[in-house]
Amino acid sequence: HDLKIKTSDEGRVMKTAAAFAKGMLELEGSLTPIMVSLIQKSETDVLMLDRSGDDEVMKDVNKCKEKLNKALQVDTELRPEDIANLTHNANQGSYWTVNGIDHCQDSVTKALWRLGNPRRALVRMYTLIGELVEQLEALVRNVMSGALQCPPSLYMDETLLLMLDRWRKLHLDLYKPHTQKFDLTKVPDVHDNIRYDLEHNAQRLPLRRMNELYTVTKNFADAYVPQEYGITQLEKMTLGTKMCGTLLERLRYDLVMGRADESILREDYGDMRYTLDESHADYLDINSVGRRVRTRLYFTSESHLHTLVNVLRDAASADGTSVIDEVGQQILADSEELCYLAHVVIRVFENPSIPADNPDRFRVELSFSPGADRPPVGVHLEEDVSGLLSPGELSFDRDDEHAAPPPVPPVPPAQQESPTS
Image (cartoon, rainbow, N blue to C red; front, side, top):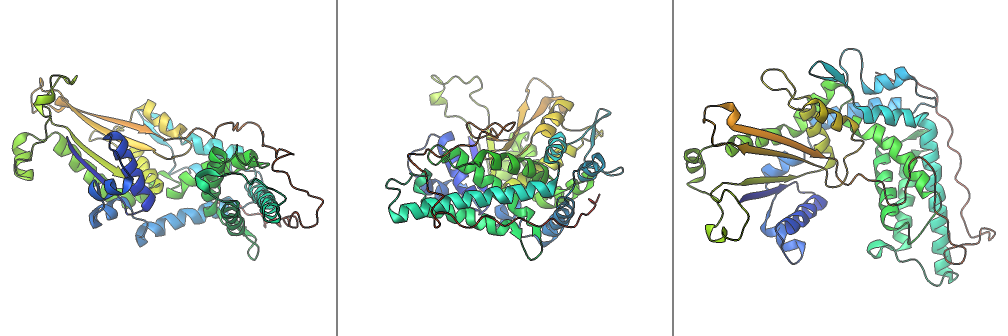
């Protein structure tokens, strides 16, 4: 098996790659030796899998964020024409055509409809985070005063103070009083944090309004995050080719080498040939013992995957038809978010019974998964079923003048603006 694993130099990406390799190869021990021995992150690999520091790429990303920031700070209900401007326009839209049928990114459109009034949603998000901070501050005071003898045991031994610091920072960063504007780039961070706490800490520390905060934040993130990397079809393709152009070239090279004959492999690799050890063939259920298997695993960030999916969605073959059929296009359109372990799999199959000069000898199969995108356990987006503190366990006295900080001040409404196209 000719296997290579490449990652960017981001720590969590490298650990994910090592954990995946450990499970796939049935290895034992810690992740550190696996990262050292199996994971490749040369300068070329980092450039290929992480373009976040590229000035040209970030210039285009920031333009998209500026458009979204202006359109999603308005204190008014989004109208059909507003939603159309945020998903497409008359000339260069987020519509694409497959076999003469127009499609749009349905998940973004639905999220914008659910969002309603963007400013009101942001104010509600800010208020709910403030309430969460109040509850955590009161719990910390009760622990320090001895009123709470058995503090909750949080996931991965996180302390209440660290959890409080996480949410207090998000609360401070989300809204800027001097500009009366929200920082929309913090919405994905809020979404990640509330999803994490609902998944791992909700049963240990059932704070109020956590489910409502998740619902509000998810609706906003589903409308905002996919559009960070291009609003119109032209923007998605332009930004996508800039950000993952090197990766696309590498994928093309992998596909060419996947169908290369032995003479080309000997010339390029010095007669390197990875095949199954035939001494194991007797007890393994493998039909083609002498077949060659080449596997390349590339691990990168969510932003990189968004741009790759945008390019694949709009890519066309030599005759002008989409490389993804109508069913595949609808699957991509319905995917609300790219979560942990979201992936694209490209496989090449060869039929040796077909002549070598016939294009039908090889078949390329493209698979996609949005990753672990299910809601946290017990969360229903249609209703607010927020957890309640158990009176005898994690309660705190609101009558005590020192039990909670002052209420969160209301956020003043911003001057209404018209969304841009």
